[in-house]
Every structure is written in structure tokens, then in C-alpha cells.
Amino acid sequence: MRLTTKGRFAVTAMLDLALRHGNGPVTLAGISERQSISLSYLEQLFGKLRRAELVESVRGPGGGYTLAKSAEQISVADIITAVDEPVDATQCGGRENCHDNHRCMTHDLWTNLNATIFDYLSKVTLFSLVAEQHAKDVNVMQDKREATPQRARVTPTGAM
Amino acid sequence: MRLTTKGRFAVTAMLDLALRHGNGPVTLAGISERQSISLSYLEQLFGKLRRAELVESVRGPGGGYTLAKSAEQISVADIITAVDEPVDATQCGGRENCHDNHRCMTHDLWTNLNATIFDYLSKVTLFSLVAEQHAKDVNVMQDKREATPQRARVTPTGAM
DNA sequence: TAATTTCCGAGTAATTTAGTCAACTACTGG
DNA sequence: CCAGTAGTTGACTAAATTACTCGGAAATTA
Image 1 (cartoon, chains in turn brown, cyan, blue, yellow):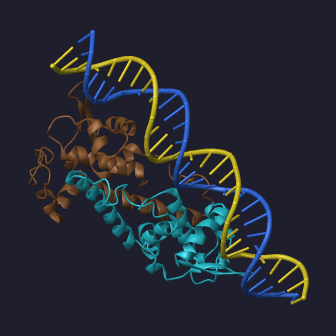
Image 2 (image 1 turned 90 degrees about the horizontal axis):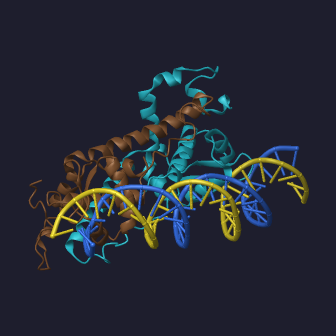
Image 3 (image 1 turned 60 degrees about the vertical axis):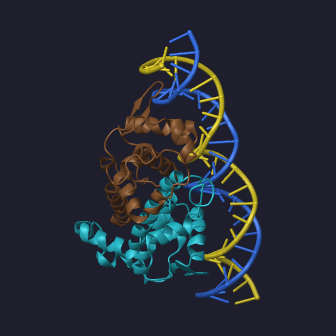
């Protein structure tokens, strides 16, 4: 379980998707523009997200991506493991290098921490992130300076 | 807040130090050998750990590093932020790029998650990691192929 | 058929990781 | 005081990863 900017990009993009969930496919070009992530990079990330079955794609005009499950069912851990290669564990994956108990112990400690973080991130879903934000800062939603129709706020008052 | 192999190395090394806490300075050469981390790389990491005042150094023969505080007072978050450069936040640090509310919102969501992870890792101390491991898997401690007393393996008596 | 948008792979610059090397300072024991 | 140990610093480097580009398919709609 790593936590890099790559994963951050993926989570941000998925969040963008979650906010528009229910309004038909969202194009990568749109996400690219809104979140300032290069389109080609998004293509790479969404290739992985699709293979991990977190998103579904629709080709052609009017196409794009949608969440493959509801926002409650997609955790941050899901997203991060989808885009970050396994990368394997410690160089001694439990079998090698570990001659005496001591070495293994320090090792276990890390593995343990890793699992703890993973468990934690498994409980943080796209839905909970959005909900948390709404609870924290409602005026952001109300402060609309532009005259654009709010199709942005796909699911306004916690109706998700 | 990133979570990379670099941070993992640092945590592992600090764990090694914590296990020997109270027995005088520990040399980097020793950590290098036990944890299979290159000495020069450890030098880099401990330079940062020292500047972050997480460890103290003693020069000369018999010298080495010791924890600057007790294991309860050093969190995983402390260690990781010490070795990982700030890396800054999202490219739009709250001021730039954020033209419309929408962009800022998705942004906040990430910042929020980031803070949550950080808070969580701030509560995980070196001490709790060691304690957790003891509680979880006692037989590791009891599985002594060597004639060393299990608790006393922190002492130089059980030197490898 | 033309436009749109996903899909896919090869390639690439910049950054980070992990590590080397060499010189230097501080300290200890004899 | 001298030799050896061990931390301290900085510059430098190979390899990996990140973030991104490009070019072209393939699918879908109008």
C-alpha cells in the first residue's frame, strides 16, 4: 500500500466522477479540464480503473466513464490498489532473507502497519468523502457566483 | 503525506532503534546489516531524522544513534514527514487555479482525506507498533531456535 | 461518412529512489 | 598525542517511477 501522487490523481478523478454520478457518462476531457490532469495520463489511469472494474466506459460521441458501482461501494483503497502496481512487499517477502526471528519481527511490524492503513482506507468510500465534505462546509455549495446551471451538483442534498 | 518505500525504510530503521532503546547508541552499520539497508542510504535518512530531532547522535567509538524521545512520543507520521520532503499540496494550493467552486471542492475532499490519514498515522507510535506485535503473535517470541532469552534479545547479549 | 471518445502501445523528460564515494569532524582508548 | 571508530556532509550516479506526449486504432453516434 503506497500513497503517492499517482493515487491522488486517481482518487481526485474518481471523486469528480462520483459528483456527476447519475448524469450519464463523463468524458476524460472534462475531468482533465476541471482537475488539471493531462488527458493522456487520465487515459492510462482509467485503463487500470476499468480493468479493476471500478468504472465502466461508453465509447463514441456522448460516451465517457461512469462508476461501475455506487459511491458507497468504492473505497479509496480500491482506487489506489487499482492504479498502483502491487510493487511487492519488503524485499524479504516472508520467505527469504529472514534468517533469525529478529529480522522477521521488525518486518512483521511494518507489514502490520501496512495492513492497518489498508483497512482504514478500505472504510473510506467515495460516498463518505463527499458526505463528510458536505457536513463540514455547506456554504461552499451555496456560494455560486457563476450563472451556469448547477448540473455540476449532481446529487445536491445528500440524495446519493 | 506520502507513503513510499523511503518512509518504510525510515520506519523500519527507527523500529530497530526502538527495540534497542536503553542500551546505548546503535550504529548505522548495525542497522544496515540487520535490516538490509545500505549504510550510505541510512546516513541520508538519519541526517534528516536528526534534523527533525527524532534521534540523537553520539560520535566516536561506541557512538551511534538513540531515540531523542521515548517510543511513545514518536509517531509514524513524524518519521515519514521527516524523510519525505513536503512535496507541497495540490498544484492549486488553495489560491491558484481554483476559479469556480467546483474545482475547489473536489480539491478540499482530497486535502481532507490527506489530513485524516495524517491524523491516523500520528496516533501510531513506535511503542504501539511494538506492543501490537507482541500481542498479536506471541509464538514468534516463543519460537526461539537460539538459546537467547526472548525478552533479552534487545540486549547486546544476543548479538548476531 | 464525419465527429467523438475510448482504447492501446511506444516513447520520453523530469523526478525520485537508492546507493556510491570521498573528505571531514568528533570522540575514545592507549 | 595518535590511531581508529563513527557520525556528517556534499556531490554524484544508476535505476526506477511518474507524469506526460504522440500516433493511431476501434467503437459509436449523428
